[in-house]
Amino acid sequence: MSTPATIIVVDDDAGIRTVVRQALQRAGHLVRTTDNATGMWKLIEEGVGDVLVTDVLLPDANGLDMIPLVTARRPDLPVIVMSAQNTLSTAVRATEQGAFDYLPKPFDLNELTRTVQSAFESKGASNRSQSHADDGEALPMIGRSAAMQEVYRTLARVIPTDLTVMVLGESGTGKELVARALHDLGPRRTGPFVAINMAAIPRELIETELFGHERGAFTGAAARSTGRFEQAQGGTLFLDEIGDMPMDAQTRLLRVLQSGEFMTVGGARALKADVRIVAATHKDLRRLIDAGMFREDLYYRLNVVPIRLPPLRGRREDIPELARHFLDRATAEGLPRKTLDASAVAWLMEQSWPGNVRELENAMRRLAALARDEQISAAVAELWIARADLPAERAPAPDQAVAAGGSLEALVAQWLQRNVADGARPPEDGLYDRLLAEFERPLLETALLLTRGNQLKAAKLLGVNRNTLRKMLTDRGVEPQTGRGVEPHTGRGRNG
Image (tube, rainbow, N blue to C red; front, side, top):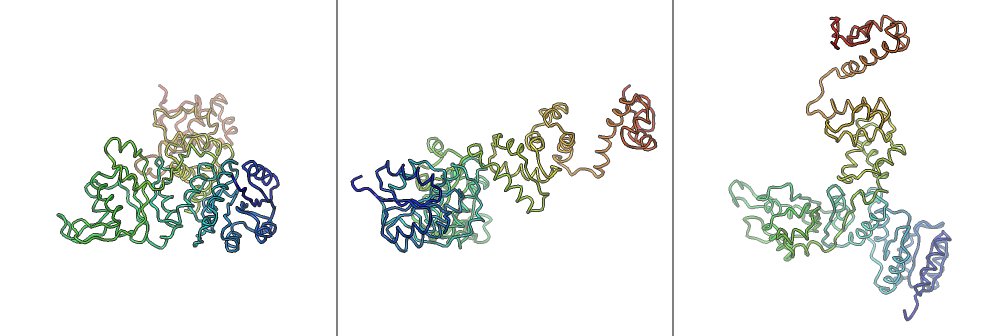
């Protein structure tokens, strides 16, 4: 570097100031540091600095609120924001306020020096114009992992633009949430958001669904119908599962992307396609291209800005926050309030979650609806999530369930799950009495066995009087002398 840049570093943490200063000095920069907004403003007023690196939470100001003031006073001073508030709202707001870039803490020092160098080289054309910021707390994406920070940073950069975006990721990772964020926070937020799932529409109807049709265009077309492109005018069109689009529809879509116009099926007049395109797929489009099932030229038209969503197993540190969010949402929807203890959180983080965030959300709704206690343990979570998904022949035997879960409640819950909750038909009335019948007979047999058939002692052991015990024995078909089950009111033994 022929002329060293002067970097202003603002952070109230002395340790961070030290390591950042040392890293930037090793890269050949001059560094001025301060621990508050007042000191930062003094340096800016003096004309010091080629790049500003500032924390968000300062003792005397919010770093994000300072960005417009800084850029108004020094338009040629790029601002890089550091923050431990690692959320999409922070990344988006930093970008909207005019920051050159956003670095979530903890960050890689090599990445910091690269970002500072890039800001210095683009000095004078770095700060973005401010747009209307939405309420960040309402944003739908959750996660503070390093993998999600990369997603947030990319989103923050492309949200203010009209660029076509390709969202890649396994099923259940939240691809539509990304599309919604691009729309809801972008310049087309006042227009419609229209989604179409290519995998859910018969192949022969996809072109009609996308472009609409005129009256009489084909047999049964009794009236004109608008397609998704027309419905999304002025807004965003989300093409989900784009890898399932048939080749003839791919050709028409490519023409639209090239010309910016489309025609309805049976139409003669070209219509302007005033939409932002966001596409998504869980498939490997490169393999489809090699197999001749996806057009390479369409791929390049759609893949202008790729955003790859990590699977949930690749961002396990986000699972506790996601799980609590889904339980809170279930409560807001009217389900009983539930919380997770430390063992449940640890168990959730150990699972592979092949269905990703969607599977976790469904699991939390199941717990909210079916678990009895407000606080959920690992044993209860395993019962209702892992074991409930096993086929009957693979479900653990009762003694195994006790060893693993350690509670009678877990066994009862397992019985309910197998015999009631997962049934194809609604359960018959009288569930409470049926469950008591299942529960009382082995309890009575065990009490008589332990007391060698002495009904007075058995009644005392159970905490009931002798007359109540006699009625229970009769109702449940248990022989008082042997403790063996009999058919009720007949005296004929069930055991031979």
